[in-house]
Length: 81
Image 1 (spheres, helix red, strand yellow):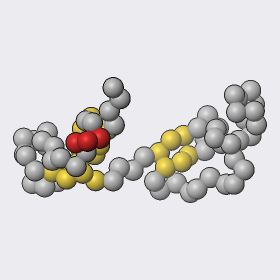
Image 2 (image 1 turned 90 degrees about the vertical axis):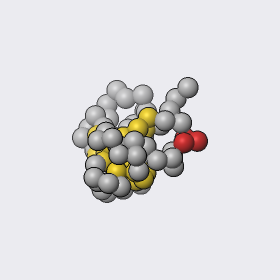
Image 3 (image 1 turned 90 degrees about the horizontal axis):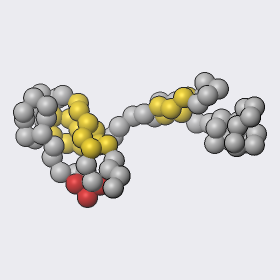
């Protein structure tokens, strides 16, 4: 069974931490690594860098129209661009 990774912030010490758990429990409080019991889930930011250096993520610009799933313009890729 695949489980997503969720990001939480402790309500007591404001430590940010991640927990691997089923999606049915994503909004349940998670124990902070410091031992505190109250936390809340937060929106995670992410980034991915393709082989040609194109970066996608929360703060990254949106890809241009017409770019393939790999970023386009690659040689020998399975995408066929």
